[in-house]
Image (cartoon, rainbow, N blue to C red; front, side):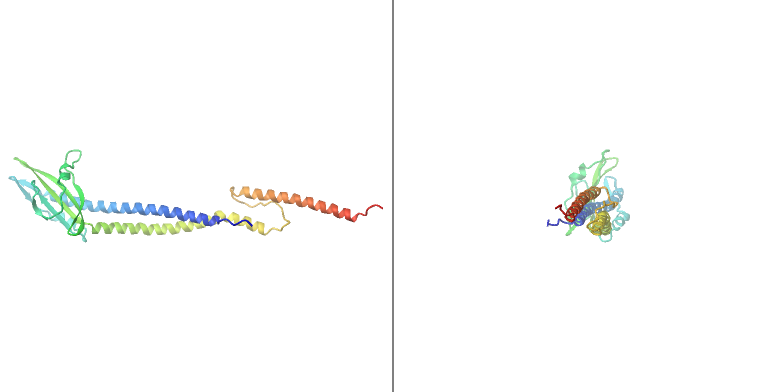
Length: 265
């Protein structure tokens, strides 16, 4: 007896599981990238809003830099209550005019060179560690001009990453919950679909099991076109067996007749 091959149903289920795992893995990876990017952009906007409010309240009067720190700038950063915020305003000689004097290295070269198409100074984001924590910093340069001279000042605002990391985790968990539900529902639908697709084969087996060994009439089952050649082959085989059986019956009848007929003396 030929060794039984593996089950078609099992192979289809394994392929379905493999495809689902690959697709869900790609979606999880993509969702993680999106969640981190969305959290970064959201809180970077808070940093930018705070820095712009501070920059708007820095002016030059009689050659001296006048700083009037707005409360709203720090209220903006307080929208992430779990995080600590840091700031510093530096003069043209890169000395700290107000704020934290021990902030990590500030990329003055990037702040001097980062400009938009109109030549305006652009904010520059960078990551450093400060006070034992990872901190996202924004630095920007502002040029103050009065009647006699122009002065460059630098604004640096930083914020720890607790809130943005929590937002990324919540987004990832939401996506993961959706994917688990999607995986379960899709798997159940695929199992049902495989059962429906393979059901004609079960009908064919049942039809053959229920037949008498002498019943060689053609099968007339409604089967998909992919199984039609198999049914046609079975019908051809049964037709050949029917012809063979008919010839055997005629031979047996003729032999029996010969046996019953006496030989002439």
